[in-house]
Amino acid sequence: RAAFIDVALHTSDDEWTALSAAADGVAVQRHAASGTVRAVVELAAPVARCAALLCCTEPRMRWDTNLLPGTRRLLQLDEHTSLDYVATPGMGPISHRDFVDVSRVELLGHHRHAAIAADDDDRIGAHRGTLLRYGISCVVDEIMPAQSGFVRGSNAASGFVFVPLGEKTRFHYVVNSDLKGWLPRAVVAANIGKALVGIVVQFRGVAEQRGAATSDIFDDDEESRALLAQFVDMYATLDSGGGGGGGNGGAGGIGGA
Image (cartoon, rainbow, N blue to C red; front, side):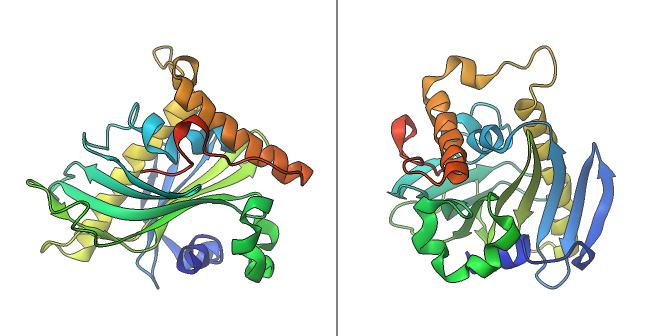
């Protein structure tokens, strides 16, 4: 958690350099000190909607073509934490990779997360209301052994940052992955950057419902609607300081790949 917050929130923009020219409105940048890569974009959709689409396996598998069949939540560890298996397709010279990550969703400043945040209120500061989903890889071969056709990669602190801008969202997709194999880091970083642009552009289309052919998954899926309601409630209770919110509801907890 601390490593992700330090890189994702407590670095200035001048610590990040452009990895490639901005494409489709998505900036791709690299943090020299940590090797972390991020894609940054502004979305014309509120944080609750964006988070419900991307933070959890069930709705994400309905739209994200960058996740292969078999991607799933392995265990729900607590209300906001899960153990996830993620299978991804090859990109350029990089073959199929898979990951087993422990991931957590956290709304900074939310009363339900007070025990976690009690020792770093000063570090949260102006970031109150920012929603994070962060994770790190772990080795649990007894639960998810190596899979045929995949190279098992490893993620250092990686995840998503959703910054509320009224009815819009500033979104960061933050990746610090070791894909294993023999390819030079510069080649890996360049291909990760291209992949991030593709993922973010696809995500933006779903979040903003761009295009006449784009249907809203929240219209026809009860589980996804319940998940969206959880995120809406989390923000409502953040604003009011009241109780409730963040329950596991029909989605089995806020978490997942």
